[in-house]
Length: 236
Image (cartoon, rainbow, N blue to C red; front, side, top):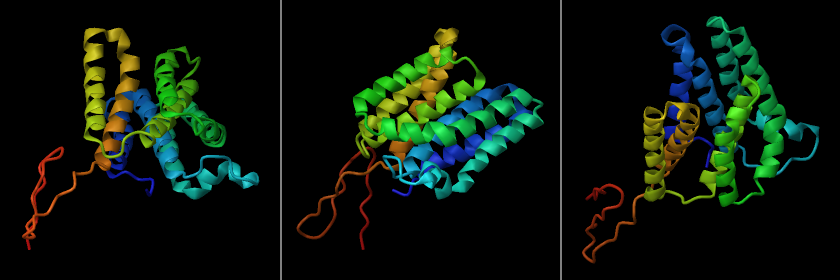
């Protein structure tokens, strides 16, 4: 795995574009977009970094930054957008949270979370989503969102690979996250986080979705079987 899922990478780019356009389109969406950006950033970093423990030497602490320094550009872009929108406090919160995530949170959590099993990580995800309202500041919310993204990646990596049922469950989670705030508006902050996590998992599953093996008849002609969607047999 090269650390880049095509569908998820496209969604990451679209989210960054929405964030860049938010000062002109809808400035109030900026904190929500940044929160989703931290979730996707944590997911993508955990996916791209192959280490499961701290590397030796002083530079091992920032080896994930040295691996792909261009990955830091979205954090700088988000802070610049906040400045353009006249939100100095938000810009400081984004930069502060990004620095803490890159220099402290990720190196520590990559070591600790890597030792947990999938059921424990799933329970931790639920606790983080429900407990984010207790965050005392905006930077803390972004940091929790980053850890949620990392945990989501581990939950996906240790789950079924290319399974249509897992994709369907993640898509159902997105639908439930959309309906919940319509019925109970107070659930919007939790539903947004849960919906973002489920959408991220759905895109990750979609990127590696596999078809069932296609059997061959004795005469050499392929017989298409139906997996999640029909497979078209290619004849010479």
